[in-house]
Image 1 (cartoon, rainbow, N blue to C red):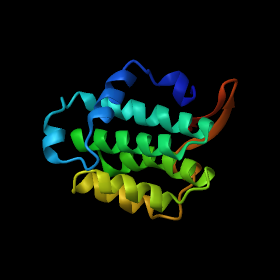
Image 2: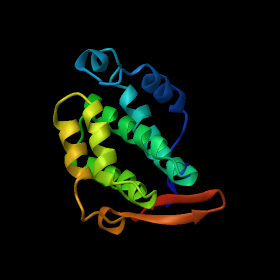
Image 3: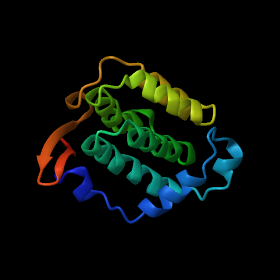
Length: 153
């Protein structure tokens, strides 16, 4: 299987960036209601793509942005928690690799999401200490452009 940046289309990145640019610091239900539920696909893809870019650029700010996009996607179109956690493993690992506390990074993002299941999942997952790429079905691979992640299955 191809690495994330090669297999996940970036055609919705501009939409995701525009949504994040106008998002209030503390996102509320009225902001979510202003979004088309279809935007969740663009936000979800952007979140997964941006986590690799955060790793390549050694940027905790990009990592937070990635996690916020992922959290917003889940707020708009809730998914099975187990599937969401598979995606959350990447920013958790990247936070650790960047020398940041995953719990702290995830807590900041969770505090910006509307109260509810998505925010609780982000905060709870960030506080875990048992995360490995292999346990969540990922591997880190070297590409000609830099590190990236690839699903194992």
